[in-house]
Every structure is written in structure tokens, then in C-alpha cells.
Figure 1 (cartoon, rainbow, N blue to C red):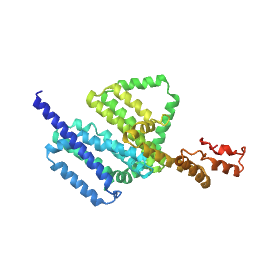
Figure 2 (figure 1 turned 180 degrees about the vertical axis):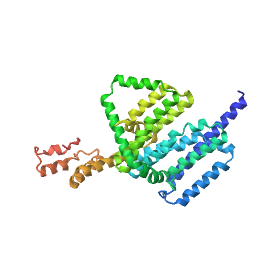
Figure 3 (figure 1 turned 90 degrees about the vertical axis):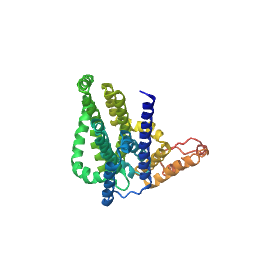
Figure 4 (figure 1 turned 120 degrees about the horizontal axis):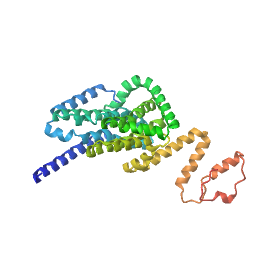
Length: 370
């Protein structure tokens, strides 16, 4: 290859990278500054898709080849939603957890089942049209003025799948628990042997199915149930699994479809998914949150969870007293007064069994609430 060809390739790469990240910046700014209308204005939907169709058709191929790329799809359809999912799990406000879980129920599945399509399309124009439509679809799902994911969930997912999902989820959960209780080395070996003889494409389908089918059902149930613990649990899973899927997709492009890759993907997926490991939460807290720079926000979320647990487990007066003691601990870190003194006094006043507290015990740097 000549130097001129090398320079042309480098220029194409830089142009593609610039366009992809420019699209990502535009998406990020629009989500941050535009108000959400919950997707109820259908005129905006019509206008959005009219602009999208015209853009995909009219945009010159010299430009669309840099804008409508696999990298752009990955950034808009996976990387940015992963970041927003991580941030949603860190904010004290819980409504965004549900909002982004609704996206992953629709957009996450769409991203993972369509990654092979652009490789299968040989015609460059058709490939550009496909990627352009896919790009606008992902953006439509969480664009504040359309909120397509919520619209799809309210109009299709919940009414059509909701009544049936709970039963299927329970059956799969029962099977998983049964497999955990009776599985031994022989069973695992037979399953592994069967997996090894499958073609590479089938192995990929199995790996993706393990990571998406059961979480998809559980996510629908979680959103329908409005139990924030379940919503957050599955949102952290999708954030972690989304990263795993992107890494798998990148390795496939560089190294091809290998058996060892899909074996590792399945093992990591099981680790992320099953409650007995809580792998998704560990990856979320120890990797994704630090990478996103959201450790302080997560601490605030955890503090909010503690407050809510106090209100749930204690009567209002006791919860208020415990809350004040915790706040005192943070506000007077260097003081010598035990923030649990008031609690101890209140226990003595209530005549809870225990020896009387001495004066010197009220002046200690150690927090002792029991």
C-alpha cells in the first residue's frame, strides 16, 4: 500500500470518528437541555420521522458514509444509554430508573439483535439507509420530545406482553432454581459438550439469548410492578451487560467468532445476572460508577436509600432521632461528643433494659448505637 493510500485511509478514519462523536455530542446536548413531553404530542413524532426519512434519503453518500456508521450506532444505541443508565441508578430521583429501563427493554434488545445486519448487507447505499434508520430509531426512543421507549412500552409491551410475561418469568425462574439445586459436574459437562458442537453463529445466538431473554422478561415485570429495587437491579444489569456485549462485538470484528469468546461471555453473563452473585451490582459500583465519575452521586443515592429504610422500619419519632444522629456524625466529624448520646438517653427514658450510661461514656469518639 502506498503512502497516499495510507493517508487517505487515515483521513477517512478521522472523518468517521469526528462525525460519530459529533452526532453523540448533539444527542447528549438535546437530551440534556430539551424538556420531556412524555411522547404524547404525535405531531412531533410525525415531524421527527419526516425529517429522519428526508435526511436518510437526501444526505449525499459521501457524507452519510461518515455519519451512518457502526460506530455511530454503537455510541448512540449503546454507549450513551449505558452512561444514562448508570447515572439514573446513581441519582436519588427514581423516575429516571424506570425511564431508562423502558429504553433497554426496547432499544437494548433492538441493538443486540441487529448488530449482524449491517455486515450482511453488501450494497453500500442500502447499508447506509439501514444504519440511518437504525440511528434515528435509537434516538427516537429516548429523545425528550418523543420518548419513544415509553410510548412503545405503554402501547405495545405492557398491554400485549405484560399479562403473559409474569407466568413465563416464573417458569424460567423455577427452572433456574431447579438447575442450581440438581446440576452437577456431569450435567455441566454435557451442556458444554452440546454447546461446543454448535456452529459459530448458533453459539452467538445462544450467548445473546442467555443474556437477553430472561432479563427482558424480568425487566417488563419490574417496570409493571413499580418496585424500585427490582427496577434498579435490572437497570444495573443492562448497563453491565451492555458493556459486555459491546466488548464482545468489538472482539468479533477483530478476531472473528471463536468458541472461547462465547464461553467467556456466557460465564460472565451468568455472573452478572444471578442474584446469588450480584455481579452486575459489583461491576456497576466498582467499575462503571468510577469510570462515569459518579461516586459522590451514588453515595447520595445510598444515603437516600438509608433514609427510606429508616422510615420503613422505624416509627416516625425514632426514625427522626436516628436520622439526626447520623447527620450529626457527618456534620461534627472531629467533635468528641458521641452522636448516639440522644439515642442512648431515649432508650434509658423508655426504660429499655440496660445499665445506666455513665457520664464519661457520653464523650467518646466512637459511635455506638446499641
